[in-house]
Image 1: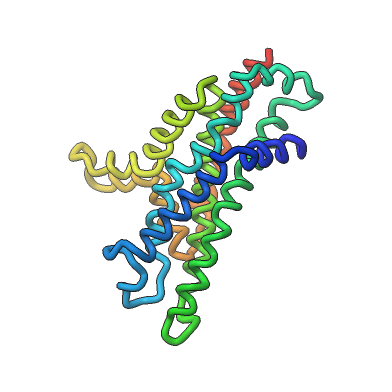
Image 2 (image 1 turned 30 degrees about the vertical axis):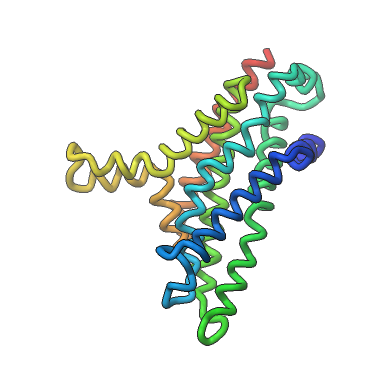
Length: 243
């Protein structure tokens, strides 16, 4: 399984697209945090990273599908999926190797954003006037969201042998999973507590909860079960293809 993890990392960074994806993410985050006047930290009276954690999920909607679209689609295009199936690895181990490899790429993408945490920490008056508990919770929320989006990206990559198609389906699926249920809950057909119930099905509700620095069991269970369900569906697809 380790060989599959290293293969995912090597494939991503051996092409220009890998560096382009990460650079695009960091540039967009930097623009929203320091340049655009409506969201700039410099125009804010408080030492906060709310801009980063507000825009990052929407960038994840495009970033993570761009990372995962090659995982199985490229294997199918090149015909190497059959070679991969002949290895003494179960479909589950193959899937988990690719999942862990892609999650490591998400973590690597987030690491440079720590410079923004340090910058805002230094700009505070006095220095260090920043809610590190909220920052930590927000990063955990991003990682949880990244885990779900990575599972979705792998699933769409497993059902299509075209990378662009896999990317587009993943983008739509991630967007619907993140904001779709929130929009759906605003329809007039829902009333009373039913609109809140619909919101809880979406990822945005649980991400917002974790980002407050208060990690509750319901939010952890949501991301674990939803990611696990999508991974199981991917396993079913891979197992069917193997046979």
